[in-house]
Image (cartoon, rainbow, N blue to C red; front, side):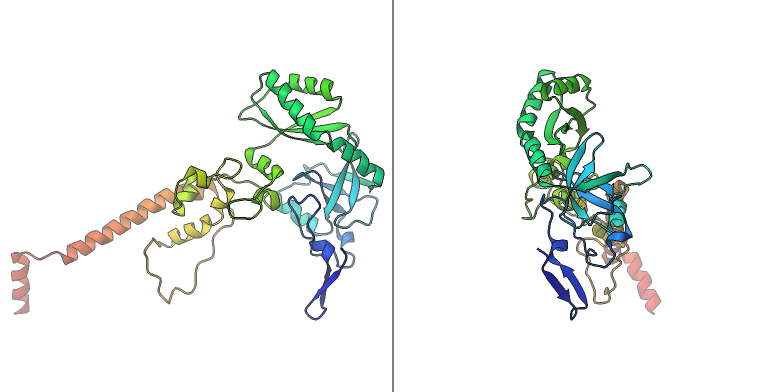
Length: 335
């Protein structure tokens, strides 16, 4: 696991463990700076991952020697939870910025100690009940007539609390449901609403491209996807091909939208010839696709069609046969 690799004539050295995926295989990260001396002392914040895509950021107040793949016991308030360290050092701050987490509003809890064998056994016994708990929870919610779906259940490492992930189209009053769950399962209950895309990310799977789902491997911030992205790229509006495993429009429809919008801003249309002088493309597009950019697609398309129609009308006007009066004036001017 700690086999070392070198690059540039041994000028750069890193271990295999820093590049391995975490044991949960969800939202993996690569700790490129883990082998630098003193890297862990740069920042006492640590990224810890739990079941599927749930992650949290904790403070290493006891200055434990942590590295990627280390299992730790963290403060869960109340109780404790078992998680896996996936990122340490200065990269944690970049990860917080990427995930748009404001530390002034985020509750930073602490890492208590390293996990031992008894902690793993207790967590395994608690998580063995998750499937049966989820089935029973769905039956109880249906018996109360609530329009919601329990998508997943996650037990805390000490077995005293469980998170029920549910999907609902609107607001659900589940106060009575929480009382029924607490009496039935004898644990503390936390209800957390997720969307269809988050549910697909927690379950995982393979997309039609042959790769793992983006929401399971790297995507954490979901932007709205509209049919305008498909029209902009001239993709066939087939609902079966545009929808992903979450039954929503595929997130990858937004990936190349900035390139198409940049071409439209330069006035390029389908069929426009590209000359050899066009060797310096304009790459000044934004990475994030806003809904306003997609809404401008229809206006840009109408403006381009209007310009093309004007060009065809001018060409038709210049190529039309001249009448007798125009021909006579031309002859007089020639004499």
